[in-house]
Image 1: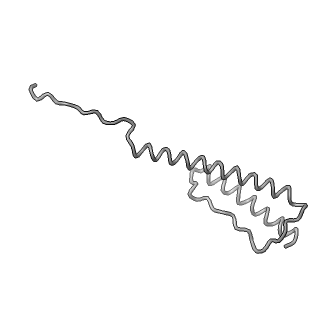
Image 2: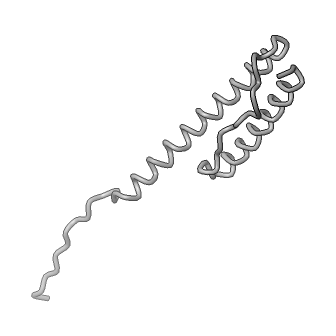
Image 3: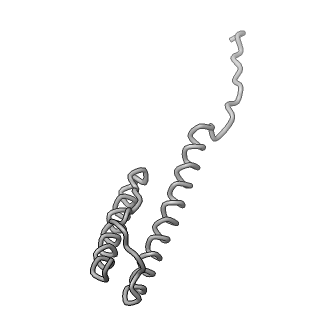
Length: 96
């Protein structure tokens, strides 16, 4: 693929990352999708390597944010399944 093809692919990846950040910010991490590049890209042109590394770093940050949010969600669900305190027995004096 040409430099123009790679540039287009990186533009699409940048757009995809922005959309996924919006999905995560909306609190709907289950709607996160993976990015699928179009066709056979071949070797990345050297002129686009810096941009590709920057997008990879953004992708890694998004993955970390997603991991943290999912861990918080799992903790919250576990807390919902278990009461905070064990119920204490109560006694009623039937002589009253």
